[in-house]
Amino acid sequence: MKDLNKKTILITGAASGIGKALSLEFAKLGSSLVLLDINKEGLKKLKNKIENQYETNVKAIKCDLTNKKNIQKIPNDILKEIDILINNAGAGAKGFFNDRTYDEFEFIANINYLSVVQLTHKFLKTTDFNKMKYIINISSPAGFLDVPYMSAYSSSKKAITSFTKCLQIELYDKNLKIMCAIPGPAKNTNFGKNYGNLIKHGWFYNKFFTYSPYYIATKIIKGIKKNKEYVYAPYLIKIVIIISNIFPWLRDYFSKKTIKKIREKSK
Image 1 (cartoon, rainbow, N blue to C red):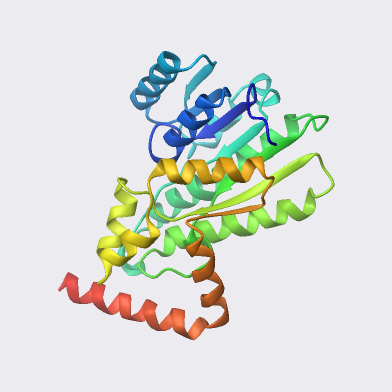
Image 2 (image 1 turned 45 degrees about the horizontal axis):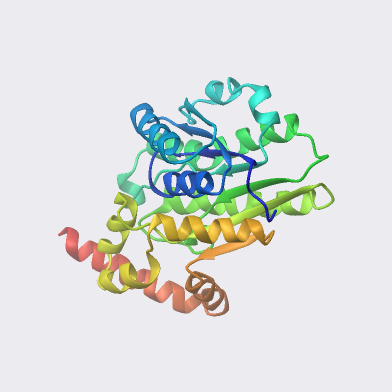
């Protein structure tokens, strides 16, 4: 999908972070936008900023994606016009499993995975495949690696990774592309800062694995233009995933070292 001018993009979690960066980058390219987020004020500010800087159409919809009734209320007439669906909304969670509650796991599963399933299902049921469509699901390195101290988040992103691959195979013969985007934690976001600070060499992690939301957004857009099924931002993430799959014992060794350091810090 090389030409994104006049395409209509739906982005969840649009009011901040990667979602906000994607919204601004698509607006720059002349795309029309449908922006979803629970943060009404953040959406309003973003909508005003885009309309003041670019000549494009913007619809901003406050939507709590953890409530399945809200997803069902998204008008089919809007979804029919969508060329690219970007399932970006998500939440992070850290802490030892025994210290977490079921409600926390349920919340993470709902926002990171089940809302993606429901919105994607609704989109596919209403879409017309006479013209090419694109679905981008935002996963994480945690969707490929078993990340200690983040069991709720890591398992939800593994679900997204597997779900995306299943759709790529099931729908291979449709006029549809499906991408799994694997960004590192975005700089200047609470999630990106918190995880880097957990580990002993957080400076190394923050330097080589975290990038600005705008860098991540441009990588995803380049991937869309090249019809890619996987986008790593930065590419170093792919190398780490490959190495960890070849040498799982090495991954487990460093994971256990990380857990040890976290426990020492918490004493």
